Length: 190
Image (cartoon, rainbow, N blue to C red; front, top):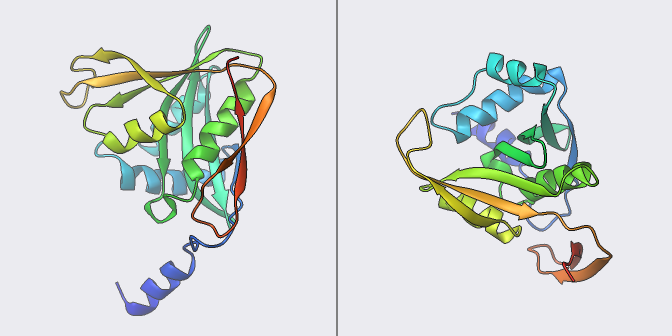
């Protein structure tokens, strides 16, 4: 990679000290190429463009896209069940990790499901400690172990769930890497 390419790439990376607005919306056809690039970057066995399109044709499925600075930086694939929503995939461009993109995607899904279901569920491979810690930090708990759950590779996985509890919001301070505090609305169970 040439030095000018590297400088251009770095100039698009958000500084940890600036406030970055992440917009989460439903996928648009124009997002597919960027989503496929992120998919290849993040997964050993990436979905093809056709796999994403096939998923979108199903009535009970959806894809949310995270946008920063007019650029697709992450996505979340989900499927609705009778009394739960399953997160099937979530990925964030490596350059935008630790910038609350994943958190914004999950929060947006939680807001969209309000009043329709009370549980979010996902399966996380045992070796993916980053994903386990990310979802644990968001209030998910491992509720079961699936033995040799993946069709692509043989490995155990955890089923993680989060109960969505609708109640009066409580405001708490959240430490952040930015030079100013941000507020997070947490729904408590009491």
